[in-house]
Length: 289
Image 1 (spheres, one colour):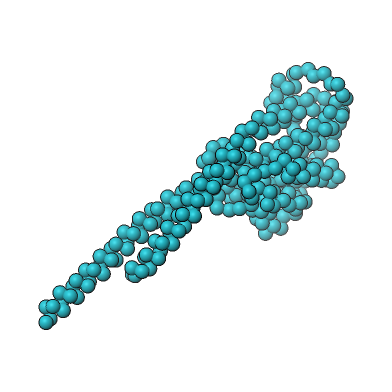
Image 2 (cartoon, one colour):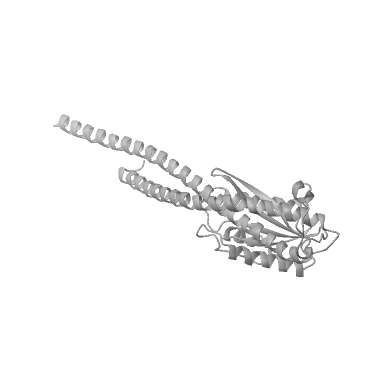
């Protein structure tokens, strides 16, 4: 049986851990509010831009061509996996890795390479000898995602897709923020930019007047579309990570409280047993005299 001193040490250790988890929960809550505001502001723009450009590009497919629109084969993929740089956020990273592995297993026989965005994705697939085109770590460690980072990543993706004609499709895997306790892993085709004419019927049916040739306009807008989707994925990932961490730290704090109560009860039992034993020893000694 553990001694009274051992129990006190364990209780103190758990209380210190509980203080850390409570502090991490408060920090995650503060970061979540900022990240959630940025996601709420950026999501409608990114979704509508995807709908409009996807619908218009399909409508004008016979009038012009662009490397980011041209359909290729279906034999080699490039995956852009957006994960966290840190752990202690519940099943956030594990769910992402599982989704990426399921995607790879579901497309067995195809050549697959990766652009990991986040230390967890890089470390996980490095141990599994995945081919990396480029890797990006430390971009979201402060709980923020910047446009400049998204632009750098999108430019690398576009240049790789355009220069390496063996890459047929580029997929973006990230976690979409729903609520604090709910996040969904999404797998979306990034390149070639998918045809969304059926989904965005209004955009496809509308008539537009072009002051410049469509080739020139879309030549600037399509790379911007890729950058916008990458930036949105990073924002969604940051918000989801902070929400998952806040939930995980809240659960950890509650579990620590329950453990402290249980240890305190055991400590009191040990102390009571020690007091009872000492009384018995005193009484026995007095009786012997």
